[in-house]
Image (cartoon, rainbow, N blue to C red; front, side, top):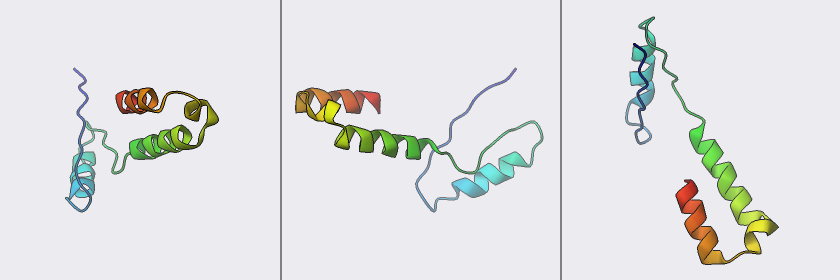
Length: 69
């Protein structure tokens, strides 16, 4: 049975080492670094600079962005 586990940690906490150790097992697929934060940063940049977001109620857009994240 396949299962998905998510791992999250602060920088310099040994998460890359843990992911690399897990990857040594052929039955486990683990990535050393996730690109998820880059997607969140991109969404934040679009939210901050896009005229479509600026034209709407600021509080409503703040709540929507937080719900998105």
